[in-house]
Image (cartoon, rainbow, N blue to C red; front, side, top):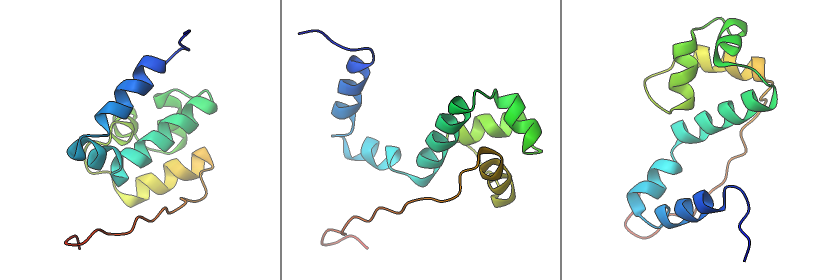
Length: 101
Protein backbone atom coordinates (compact mmCIF):
# COMPACT_ATOMS: atom_id res chain seq x y z
CA UNK A 1 0.00 0.00 0.00
CA UNK A 2 1.34 3.44 -0.95
CA UNK A 3 1.21 6.22 1.64
CA UNK A 4 0.52 9.81 0.73
CA UNK A 5 2.43 12.77 2.11
CA UNK A 6 1.37 13.39 5.69
CA UNK A 7 -0.33 10.04 6.19
CA UNK A 8 1.99 9.06 9.05
CA UNK A 9 1.14 12.33 10.80
CA UNK A 10 -2.58 11.78 10.26
CA UNK A 11 -2.29 8.31 11.77
CA UNK A 12 -0.34 9.67 14.75
CA UNK A 13 -2.91 12.41 15.26
CA UNK A 14 -5.76 9.90 15.15
CA UNK A 15 -4.01 7.76 17.76
CA UNK A 16 -3.25 10.80 19.94
CA UNK A 17 -6.91 11.90 19.82
CA UNK A 18 -7.80 8.65 21.60
CA UNK A 19 -6.13 10.08 24.73
CA UNK A 20 -8.82 12.19 26.48
CA UNK A 21 -6.43 14.95 27.61
CA UNK A 22 -4.93 15.29 24.13
CA UNK A 23 -8.36 15.34 22.50
CA UNK A 24 -9.51 18.01 24.97
CA UNK A 25 -6.46 20.17 24.18
CA UNK A 26 -6.81 19.76 20.40
CA UNK A 27 -10.48 20.72 20.64
CA UNK A 28 -9.81 23.77 22.82
CA UNK A 29 -10.81 27.22 21.61
CA UNK A 30 -7.19 28.44 21.61
CA UNK A 31 -5.99 25.61 19.38
CA UNK A 32 -8.92 25.94 16.99
CA UNK A 33 -8.34 29.70 16.63
CA UNK A 34 -4.58 29.18 16.21
CA UNK A 35 -5.14 26.56 13.50
CA UNK A 36 -7.57 28.85 11.66
CA UNK A 37 -5.18 31.80 11.74
CA UNK A 38 -2.23 29.68 10.61
CA UNK A 39 -4.16 27.97 7.78
CA UNK A 40 -5.60 31.22 6.45
CA UNK A 41 -2.23 33.00 6.71
CA UNK A 42 -0.70 30.19 4.65
CA UNK A 43 -3.51 30.45 2.07
CA UNK A 44 -2.77 34.16 1.70
CA UNK A 45 0.98 33.50 1.58
CA UNK A 46 1.68 35.94 4.41
CA UNK A 47 4.53 35.75 6.88
CA UNK A 48 3.79 36.25 10.55
CA UNK A 49 5.50 39.63 10.33
CA UNK A 50 3.38 40.71 7.34
CA UNK A 51 0.19 39.74 9.14
CA UNK A 52 1.38 41.47 12.30
CA UNK A 53 2.05 44.69 10.39
CA UNK A 54 -1.38 44.61 8.76
CA UNK A 55 -3.13 43.85 12.05
CA UNK A 56 -1.11 46.47 13.95
CA UNK A 57 0.38 43.99 16.38
CA UNK A 58 3.66 42.12 16.77
CA UNK A 59 5.04 39.00 15.14
CA UNK A 60 5.34 37.51 18.63
CA UNK A 61 1.59 37.91 19.19
CA UNK A 62 0.83 36.18 15.88
CA UNK A 63 3.15 33.38 16.93
CA UNK A 64 1.38 33.11 20.30
CA UNK A 65 -2.03 32.94 18.61
CA UNK A 66 -0.92 30.22 16.21
CA UNK A 67 0.74 28.24 19.01
CA UNK A 68 -2.33 28.60 21.26
CA UNK A 69 -0.15 30.11 23.96
CA UNK A 70 -0.44 33.23 26.06
CA UNK A 71 -3.28 35.60 26.64
CA UNK A 72 -4.13 37.51 23.48
CA UNK A 73 -6.74 40.22 23.76
CA UNK A 74 -10.00 40.29 21.87
CA UNK A 75 -9.00 43.52 20.12
CA UNK A 76 -5.90 41.83 18.66
CA UNK A 77 -7.91 38.80 17.54
CA UNK A 78 -10.49 41.10 15.94
CA UNK A 79 -7.81 42.89 13.91
CA UNK A 80 -6.13 39.60 12.90
CA UNK A 81 -9.46 38.09 11.81
CA UNK A 82 -10.34 41.24 9.88
CA UNK A 83 -7.00 41.18 8.02
CA UNK A 84 -7.39 37.48 7.21
CA UNK A 85 -11.02 38.07 6.18
CA UNK A 86 -12.18 35.40 8.63
CA UNK A 87 -15.79 36.42 9.11
CA UNK A 88 -17.31 33.77 11.32
CA UNK A 89 -16.77 30.69 13.41
CA UNK A 90 -19.07 27.75 12.81
CA UNK A 91 -20.12 26.35 16.14
CA UNK A 92 -20.24 22.59 16.45
CA UNK A 93 -22.06 21.21 19.44
CA UNK A 94 -21.48 17.99 21.27
CA UNK A 95 -24.01 16.57 23.67
CA UNK A 96 -22.68 16.59 27.22
CA UNK A 97 -22.33 13.16 28.75
CA UNK A 98 -23.85 12.42 32.14
CA UNK A 99 -21.83 13.96 34.95
CA UNK A 100 -20.34 16.76 32.82
CA UNK A 101 -21.56 20.29 33.23
